[in-house]
Amino acid sequence: MTAIELRSVNHWIGGKHLPSKSTRTSIVWNPATGQPQANLDLADIDDVDHCVAVAKEAFHSWRATPLSRRAEVMFKMRELVDANRRRIAELLTMEHGKTVSDAMGEVARGLENIEFACGVPNLLKGGYSEQASRGVDVYQIRQPLGVVAGITPFNFPAMVPMWMFANAITCGNSFILKPSEKDPSVTLYLAELLQQAGLPDGVFNVLHGDKVAVDRLLEHPDVKAISFVGSTPVAKYIYETGTRHGKRVQALGGAKNHMLVLPDADIGMAADAAVSAAYGSAGERCMAIAIVVAVGNIADPLIDAITERMAKIKVGPGMEAGNEMGPLITREHRERVASYVDGAAKEGATVTVDGRSDASMNSDGFFLGTSLLDNVKPGMRCYDDEIFGPVLGIVRVKTYEEALRMINDHPYGNGAAIFTRDGGVARQFQFDAEAGMIGINVPIPVPVAYYSFGGWKGSLFGDLHMYGPEGVQFYTRSKVVTSRWPDPSSSKVDLGFPQVR
Image 1: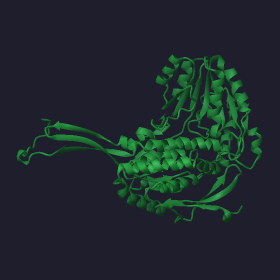
Image 2: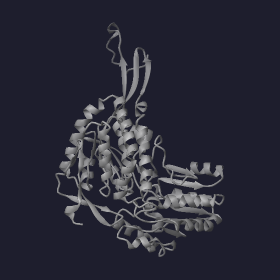
Image 3: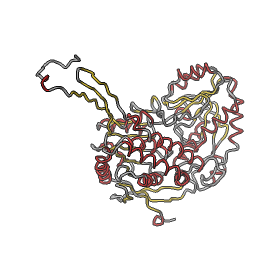
Image 4: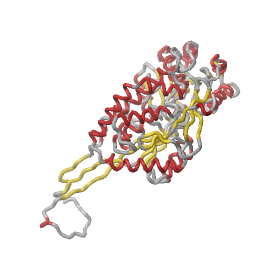
């Protein structure tokens, strides 16, 4: 296939597909075949400035739109996304590579956030205190920020944008989405659906780009807030750069999620959970289980159960029915993930199952089979780093206290899970574990949309978690009004500090 045969992926600005002013492009690959499938426009500074200007102009009328009308748009968007689940999932699979069934699950979880946004007007009610002082009333209102931007990762190209734009738009902001360059097309389809739902042009925009676009968004004086999901080094950069330019920033970074399995746990249930959470979406999830901490004598039977289940996983193109795990996103990422398996034995771990020998590796796509590493320890690269691929490590410990200390000492604190039949220990774990999201006999504790998503430690930069009530708080600012309508005859000059009388 030659470059001239590739489809073009443009920006979405002001309610239409808009080619870039820049001549820079990048390739969108098909990870299942290893072939290029599209040319993607990459924004330059002029593209960013134009997009921000369009969003700023749209904001003025959108913020004045009644709350009921904003919610109505989200209700219609909810119906459109629901009716087009399959189409969204297939677009997602075509560029990301995950199986269609997995993509359908992503769409469902994203849809929850649109449903939550339909009720955002209830969270914007503020408060009112009558007669706070004699003849004085005090009340608080929440108002939108203006132009806000979201920078989203390749692993959830539909769900994570919905985490952001649903609340942001319903709160009255205009939104600029900078999706991953690796799988951008699904965001353009969402833009078209928002237009069909009745969202005014310019309120939602999609700007494709790389570091040039990101840096300009971070510096632009008319962009008031940035939401980001990605790796920890980039999250730290986004947070520090954005806040230095006076922006409100929430930046979600990397993860190394632990699953603690106690001796009393149901081995079959724990093995099912570990395999599902480690290898779903080829491990390209920030909430994937990367480390199983096996306490005491449960390690050997648990590893046997995990290995038995791994052997049944069918790896292949995500569009083909029956496949359970698709390829990794790029050839470079596949090689990076494989390097951790390469180095595990040299560091003292045992490669129990080697995904590099999987038959799928012989295809032209970016496939890598599932790997299982035993006798993993802190200090090994395969333990310390976020691998972001189908590699599961087993750490053996003697006690619950040792396992807890290991979890709490890790620099990431996105999620942690415990599998046990003991309610007292489970409650103690939720009290002790230093992570933002805890699962009890649940391996991937991604909160439902009416709670908020976010980790601790190196997994989060900023004060507020994403979506849910904290998402509404992030995309609005409070204003307190003190009001008095006195009898003019009672007015007088008083240079003293105001007091409640």
